[in-house]
Length: 237
Image (tube, rainbow, N blue to C red; front, top):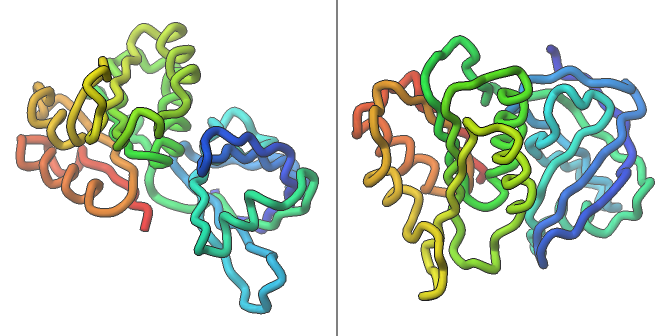
């Protein structure tokens, strides 16, 4: 699936949290796009600045939804891309290139799967999870999602609906700075792995997030016995 120039319009923008937005882009030309779960698009920022800028955003919608591209972004006030994407009117034309990227699910593997994310790193993982479940993957699939504070959490209703529909899918949310009343997992995602990664030789992992978390988690999985070829990651800079 080679990358192509894409013309779209911003069809919908959903304000999830103070700085988290879900964006829906309706495809215009081409009207449909084929891609692999985990890939991304490069969106052209047209904010009036003469310097051309493209920014990469993972696709959240599953490949079966060929006429729309959905993504989830975090507003970075000091940047150019997210302030533009979070203020343009619905119906605004948006140009992009895609699909791009090699962060893809290994469909030949018969191993159990753990997905690990922090923040908006959940975006390509939701795409992979829904795609695999819709395709009939019945192996155990677990999602571990890390945040600092409870007020940072979003998409719990989405995850609950997936878990209710597919019994082989489970998820846990862990907080690195929880209140005493927090009933869920506590600590960084690496702490969870140290205490809960059983049968690493029979597990593949997909990791996405910002900064050192990705590399630290990948290294820990290998240290605990997971084969290197079963450790996949996408790092957001």
